Length: 82
Image (cartoon, rainbow, N blue to C red; front, side, top):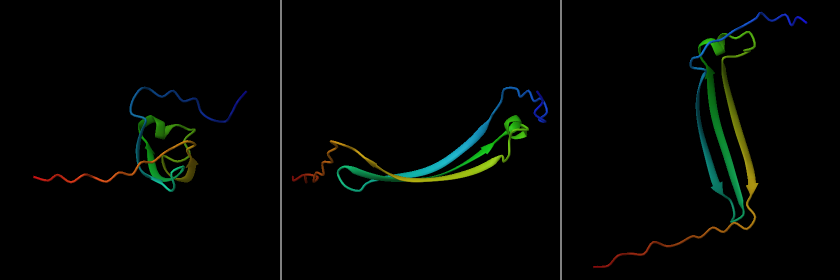
């Protein structure tokens, strides 16, 4: 069976570089919210593959999660007296 894609044999080497940032925050004692942004860049032979459509990509994510039985303790810092 032929696919129309040329045979490709990559060798070892660096494949990709990733960078990202994210934040997670407690909304209530049981619910948390999160968000993130990331970018990735294929390098070398991975970028040259005939299956690669784009060598650079970005992504964003957001969501909420439920933590059953979770407790968040908020404490006050004790002051030191001399």
